[in-house]
Length: 245
Image (cartoon, rainbow, N blue to C red; front, side):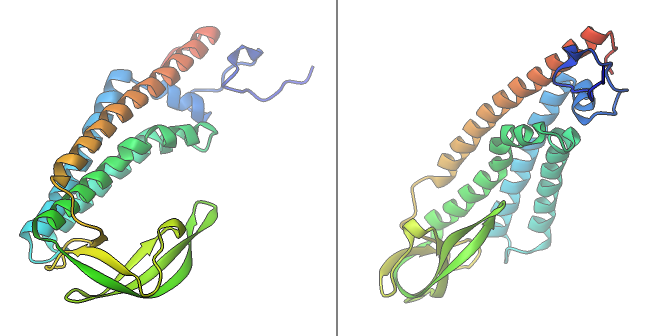
């Protein structure tokens, strides 16, 4: 009888488990400590979101320009915390089929800092933004890489009465025609990104609520995923009499 390679997804196949740490999937499962990992994940994502919000707020409301030392340092800290999450919960998985599941599980949590940043930007536009009618002067179709695909987008140039020349990228469904009049809200101080349409009321509270919901849902999904991996590792070790790490 020819022995097949050990598959950690089917420990009952009659093959001995690999040495600890030799197979990425089993090594990841053997390292899971539920309480520690759940707490570490919650602290990392909340800290990354807090640093992102502080960087955005300081650069758009306090500093003379966006790229000044304080917001840059705060944003660098947020990026490092995000990378720590990516390593701790995704890259430690190794190049296995489950790495795609690990990425999917954490998408909401990884999006939290982005939601916070957008909320601060929208708050700036609500407080000091100027809305005016701008005319589309040019339109260009471009292709943007998205994973393995290249998706079409449209880059527009808009001429505004006081804001001058602005650019706006849209999806094919939302593109503007040359000569069309488009409402644009922009920051006269130039520290927030402009967007089409009127500013919304209480945007920071709205995006804060969305980020909070993302945290609750994302953390719940993370807990379910880690419990599944932890229990699968425990069953494998019990089946072979292998001690946990």
